[in-house]
Length: 283
Length: 143
Image (cartoon, rainbow over all chains, first blue to last red; front, side, top):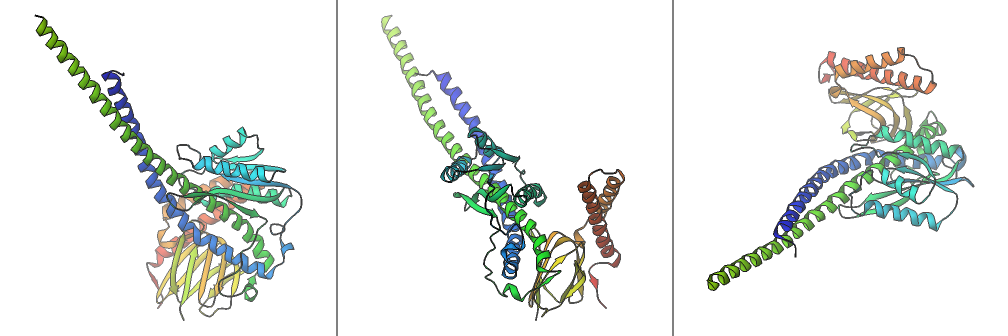
């Protein structure tokens, strides 16, 4: 049985771990708030862009722009969004397992662009060819951050290096649920225009093709930005929950150790009293 | 009929209110929109967006984007939209000086040159919009 001093030291250690996990929990909670706010704030822009794109699609044919055209051949590219840092519960594991299944189910010529260190490390271990890597975009991702990524994938698609581009990211459903999600980014699949005026009643200035030309890169960037924000919100909420559990576990552990400590202490006192008693009797 | 104006950027909803009219920097020149405008989608250039609401005028410095007009609603999707009242004149002046310095430094690559010129243009625009507001007092009013 462990000595009194050992148990006391263990209680102290667990207490220190608890301080850290608690702090991380609160930091994650405040970051989550911010991430959630910016995810919501970014939504109107991408919804609007989708809508205009749907209007344009009603006027233009598929072959009007290379980003719209489905194509034969070319590699499949997966843009994988994970977090840079760990200790975020099962989030990265789930996302990576999801993408691994997607890869094995549809084997073929493919490459991955990783956003976030965890995804890159996992893809390296699995020997999946990495096309490029972007370090996660910090606590406050800005639209400008995703422009280089957007340019890389659109250029690759237009040049014919990639035949199809998918994005995989943990979608933020709620604080408790983050669901790995795969969506096709390119070729662009315009949504059905559901609201108001049909696209063919719009006047396009300077012309539909010119507007499309400008709109598509922004559409791609907006979609990627949305994924970055979702991944960020998922990361913080997953970390918050994981750290909350860790803190509670530490509490349980401290309780158990304290019980053990008291038992040992009691046993020691009893033993000492017996020793004193037998000593006194022997006199 | 009121006209609902929304200005959205990738990062936020910058403005949402009913207005009487709005003047925008279209790619083909200035463009005024009043209620009952025909449905229109237009590219926007870099410039000043002016909102008229009653006797008040509000302005934004906007860069790059699109405009979608319906009879009762105008949506501006811009890469950047700064409300004139919120532009810090000193910061804008500093950004302009930096952009000018960068341009003088010389560039070898076309892309860098374009980026530097773009930065200068944006800095100039922000300064112009903010200065005008500053000069004319706030809120600017029509007769």
